[in-house]
Image 1 (cartoon, rainbow, N blue to C red):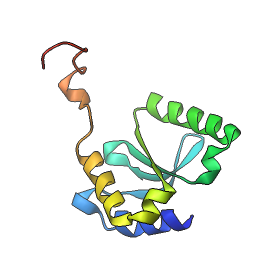
Image 2: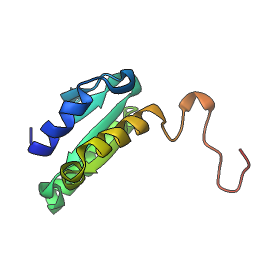
Image 3: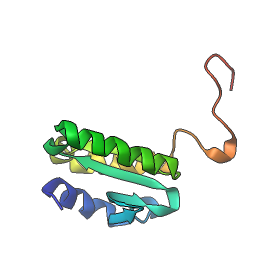
Length: 115
């Protein structure tokens, strides 16, 4: 694990708001940085290596696979974690707790439709 991943793990391993995160968790042919299986939520910490064009293509394939298999994916920059790990961990937990769309509520409204 990289330094930003180790820093973030110190917060996520405490089961914030009751969410159990796993680190370096395999999903299909991929290993994700962090995963909350109960919420089907994946967190990827992107360092400088992710700027490489070949790595970006690999990341796109991995994210597509994860989404096709029902996971929500949040990518955070390693720089953000290094700047403020506590705030980053809080933001991750907030996103875990409040997904943008709850599938049980039905499909999201189309643009221009009232809720």
